Image 1 (tube, rainbow over the protein chains, first blue to last red):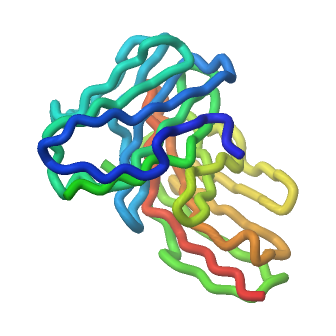
Image 2: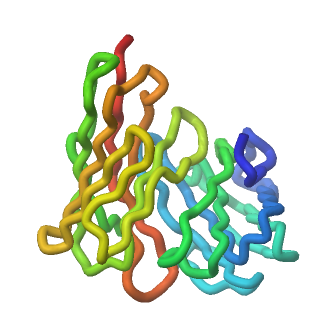
Image 3: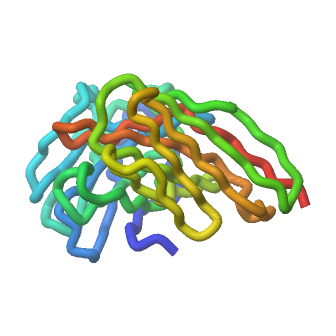
Length: 115
Length: 111
């Protein structure tokens, strides 16, 4: 079992809905990440939080809004999504604030379907 | 944008055989990491090799890194059916906090 917990495991939402994805880790890691993965493709970086501050936004559309309430929690708020946003959303954490020093620990993801 | 390219895209072998996957990248790196992903699951970190290292071992895994050719390989020896998964290389540049994944190799080990 992974030490990064993501909820829900599956989510179906309409294009006018507002929903949130949640991610939690209790390893004391100082950086947390959101990745998006389409079928048969590699994960693509969306956001990086370092010491609870947003450090990287990979030009993600504003319909995706990240939030880091504390060092253990990471949320991704979703609003007015498009069908092409359907994907596996992966949360990850790393012990060090820099990936040059420590590997990522991934959750099992939320499978999102936008109808 | 993807930093690494992997080949082969797919590999099918018999249990007990060795599997070799290759990764090439374009820019200078601080380290290169390999991850495994079982179908529909998250990624699991396998090995991290730094730019000043040439080879690293972990159990049945052997990773090599050639920074002059900007390439790496992952060797899985004595493969098992449980090794069936997608394998991704990922690179971390000298500066910044991004880990960028290659396209991945789908490995199928037949029992």
